[in-house]
Length: 67
Image (tube, rainbow, N blue to C red; front, top):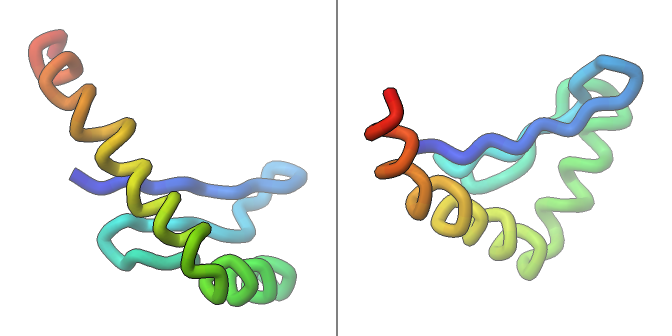
């Protein structure tokens, strides 16, 4: 299971958090700066890493049964 959080502006994805990488990756010039900023904040990264357990692991059984 992988948790992905994509950040968009004007329908363009400029950054993405991936739980398998454990950090943000930027896709545009602005996104690279934002990713560096978010990756430098250990508390924010810990919050994003915990989101996998909060959203994915609690709901995987429900989603799997409905398929």
